[in-house]
Image 1 (cartoon, rainbow over the protein chains, first blue to last red):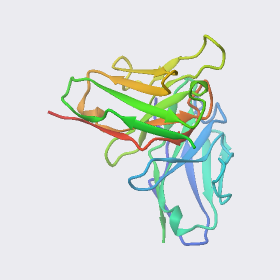
Image 2 (image 1 turned 30 degrees about the vertical axis):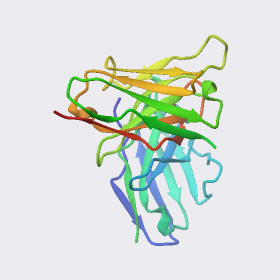
Image 3 (image 1 turned 90 degrees about the vertical axis):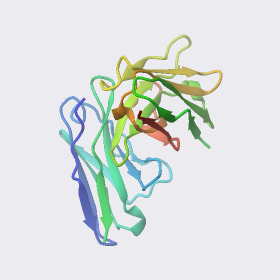
Length: 110
Length: 126
C-alpha cells in the first residue's frame, strides 16, 4: 500500500491559478477513475473538494477542478483566494479494495 | 445535515486496547460504507479501514484494512444504533494519531469520503 506522490508545497498570488499533481501506479490512479481531493485547514477535519477525478460536491466552488492522465491526477485551483491556503491531499481507490492517500501539498497564497 | 461524532480516544499504554465509536446522523446510515482515517501529529492522512453498507438485505458488512493495522484493528457497525466502531488492540506508539470517522460516497467501497467527523485523539505512550 504505497502512498501516492505529491509536491510538498506550491504557491501562487491571489487571482492566479495553480495545479497540484498526484502520481500513482497502474494499481490505483491508473486503474480506476476514483481519485479524490481533500482540503484541510489547520486544526480542522478534511473536506472533500473533488471526487471521481472531475466531480465537485455540492457547495464546492467551480474554481476547483480535477483531471487525470494515465497514472497521474491533478487538481487546479483558479482565481486563487486567501481562503484557499490549506493542505491538499489526493487519494485513490486501489485494486486491493483499499484507499491510498498522497502525503499532502501545502498551498501558500502569497 | 450529516453529522459524525467520534468518541473513545485517550491515553493508552503500548500493548493496550481501545474502542472508538462514531455516532452518525442525518443520512441513511445502513446504506453507506464507512471508513476510519487517521492523522499522526503534524503528518498526512492515512486510511485505516472500511466497512461496507447494506444495499441488499442480508448483504454488506465487508471489511478491509490497511496493512499497518491488519490483524490488530477491527471495524464494525451497529445499524440499529447508527454507530460505527473501531476496536484497536496491541497498540503501538506509531498508532498515535487523530482518528477520523468518515462517510463513504458509495455503499460498497471507500473510493471517496464525503463527510468527516471532528476526530478523536489516541495517544499510545507509557
